[in-house]
Length: 492
Ligand SMILES: Nc1ncnc2c1ncn2[C@@H]1O[C@H](COP(=O)(O)OP(=O)(O)OP(=O)(O)O)[C@@H](O)[C@H]1O
Ligand SMILES: [Mg+2]
Image 1 (spheres, rainbow, N blue to C red):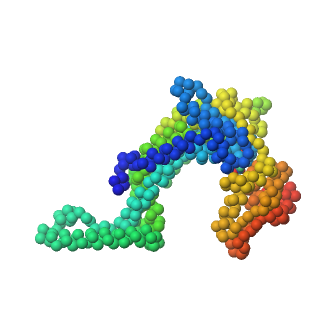
Image 2: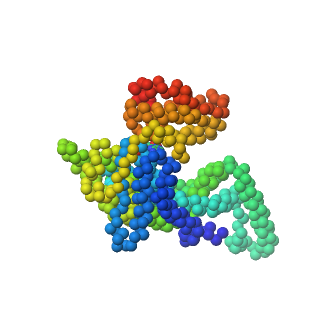
Image 3: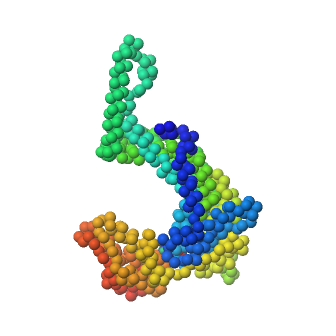
């Protein structure tokens, strides 16, 4: 138990810290083919987009291995995904980040305004990315020390239930008469032995889970002073100051207060404390920043909203500010140092994926410098009835699987006939055509409608163990809605 000490240095030596880093390197080593295969598990179609992001991810790795002088000449493979709503743009980026185990943030370009104006400044996306990365690394490290923390928590619970008899006699000796020393020493040893035995028994009971509901009184650390303090301000810089203040505050000793809690609760509270003590935050932050610099992904949604359509000769006002946001974006996308509360972060290798419908503005309406920084354009296609059929059934997280799993928890087996799934896909395609094309999101609204009654009536008003949704049921439930355009506008 040599590393259970809480000193900061010991944690660095933990073997787990190494293995965590290794796994992320493996994930970063995926070949384009492997990446596409992994994306295929969740996203139907959109081959071109998958290929582009796979190449971009791999090229980042390749670029990092090029010799220094040439590396800076090679432009990052930032991508613009162009396509209608609900066809998988965000989903592809999100999945990509997940499978690469990369820090990832999604931001809406339209939320940003130029530095100096009200709104969020562009650099905040990098600060968010770092925060996300810190949380990610921290939770990896917590996993690694969880077992060790659990043992320490057991010790602390035992201390509360059965305080140990002081084992060192020196402290007592000061007050005790010399003549009494011998017999009391014997008794003392005995009571230590007894205490030790009952602790062992208590430990068994603790582990058996029989004591989870028992109430105990314990010291818990309260909020850090100033924990309730919030800094309001329109600017990102203000948020940042708030963050720094809070960091400073959290360094102050926390107030401890007594509370009665169940053992189960105490276990959770103590585990948080022990995990916190076992983790070396300095090295977490170091790894997190490294992760951001080497493998971070920023997804900029609605980039078309900050492009000014060239035809628009009127209202110059908003156009100027949109262009300002683009100009603010430039250095970050090109690669620069951004100050965060965790330190400086270089954005040279961060992968930027922008996305937009580009109905009004075109990618060529972005300022030329920014266009140059997003050299890869990829178009995503509208989804067809056949795509919907596949989306309902194939992905690991397919809607049909989700609903079946939900009802499975109530002991009801939910299945769909093939005809029913075809019918749902057909209705989705039809409503998209007649009302508004919202892509695969349509499947969500249709499924909620179709299954609403079932979801409401289970468990009380339902005795069957198995429901099969067939084509007739789908038609009965939905056809009258589909037929009425007004109605489907509101319901589907
Ligand atoms: N090709 C697809 N395969 C599987 N699921 C999809 C596909 N396209 C969309 N979806 C599902 O539809 C939902 C919306 O998709 P997503 O968020 O990717 O839309 P988007 O293209 O980013 O649209 P927007 O332009 O509105 O942001 C998600 O739940 C996603 O799982
Ligand atoms: Mg999106």
